[in-house]
Length: 318
Image (cartoon, rainbow, N blue to C red; front, side):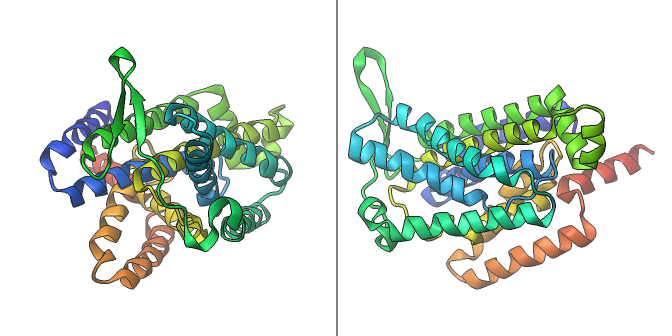
C-alpha cells in the first residue's frame, strides 16, 4: 500500500472527531481504535507468523481487569496501571505460550481456545476479586499528569474526544511496531515459520524463540487495549472477553486482510461500524453477519478487502 494511502488513513483518523460530533459516533471511534489495537496485535500472530489464536480476547480481559483492580484497590495511577496491564497479559502469554508454541496447526488453535474459556471461567467464578457475573463497576476514569503537578481527568461521559486521541496514539504505536517487525530480521524469521517451519529450522532459525517473542509482544499489546477499554467503559463483565470476542477479532483480521499493511485498520473500521449499526435493532443479525463474513473471506477473499483493492489497482496499472 503506497505511503499516500497510509497518510490519508492517518489524516482521516485525526480529523474524524471533528467531523463526527455526536456522542454515539465518537463512542464508535473510541471502540474502533481499541479494536485496531487488538486486531493489529492479533495480526502479528495470524498474518505474519501463521499462528491462529482463538483466545486473544482473554489477554484483553487480563489487561482490563489488571488495570481496573490496580487503580481501584491499590490506588495506582493510570499511567502505571496501563503498562502493568500489558505486563500482566504478557506474563500470561509467556506461561501459556512456552509449552503451547511447540504444538502446530489445530493443536495450538485448540490450546488458545481452551485458555480463553479458562480465563472467562476464572473471571466469572473469582467473585472476591472480580465480582464475577455481577461485573466490576465504578472503574475510575483515566488521569494524565499536567503542568504544575495537576492532573487531567479524561471523563469519557463528558468528553470522548480527548480519550479517543489517547487510544489513537496507542493504536498508532501498535501499528508502527508491527510495521517495524515486518521489515526486520524477526519478521523474516516469522515468515519462515509461516511458510515452512521445518525448513526454517533446517536453515538454523530458532523458530520457537521467535514465536515466543511475537506471542508475548502480541499479548502485551492486547493487555494495553484492555486497560484503555476498562477506563473508558468504567464497567467490566467477564462475557465481554469470552470466545465470541476472540472470534470477532479473528474475523476482523481476515476481512481486513491478514498480513497486509492496512488490513488491521480496514477490518475493525468496517465490522465495528456494521455491528454498531445493528446492535440496537438486529443484534442477532450482527453475529450472523460475522460468520458470513468469515466464510466469504476464506472462500473468496484470502487477503481480505485490502488484498482485493491491491489486486484491482494492479490490474488497472497493467
